[in-house]
Length: 98
Image (cartoon, rainbow, N blue to C red):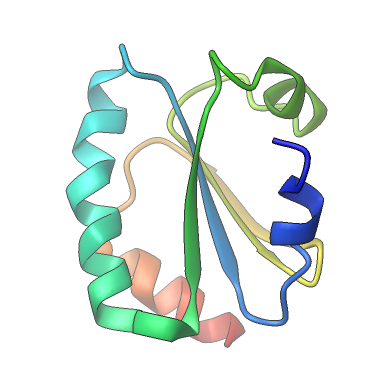
């Protein structure tokens, strides 16, 4: 994904979900992320990066476990957490940076 740096350089927050197809907790994050997107609409962009297909990006951002969620705004990392994060927590974290 060559435009990754362009994507995370947006003026609005961009939540990146680093995941793997074989990862159970990653599968749990998918409906949570959909709910977050439904709740926040255009306030946030959410993208998913498959670490197995994008190993260079995963290595560059030191993603060692999945799922890893990283929130960017204008190219700067604002927040990062590995593991499943609940909808209400994600919404309040994203809102705090809007």
